[in-house]
Image (cartoon, rainbow, N blue to C red; front, side, top):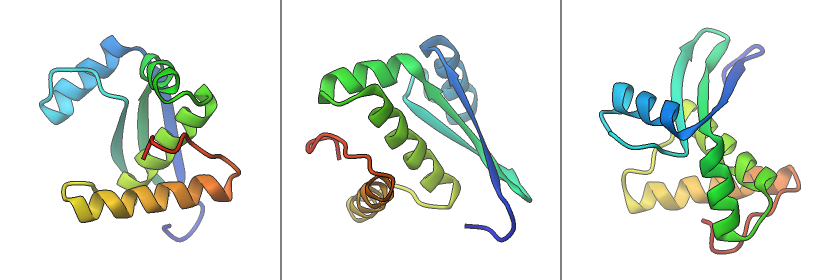
Amino acid sequence: MPAGEPSVAVRIMGDAEMRRLNRTFAGEDHATDVLSFAGSGDQLGDLAISWPAVVRQARLYRHPQKTELALLCVHGLLHLLGWDHATAAETREMSRLTLAALAASGVKPAARRL
């Protein structure tokens, strides 16, 4: 984490807004579950999270919505800290870090979620 007291803004939105942001900033014309936008200084960045995706994915993996929301927040935060999942090795490491952060918070996602 950066020195000082970094902050992260989180915005919960619908799929239509998420699709617009994904198209505008990532060139992908579909809704996604979470997007990360880098900040500067003490503002580490912003996270955009699709609430309909939280609901769908929680139902799919059969865990609580708050668990899915926590997982997406950690995933987005890892992106803000410079982590990515472009390769299999990076995906494994991001999954490991996500599970460790969730465990430290007492959150346990469904076994097949990551």
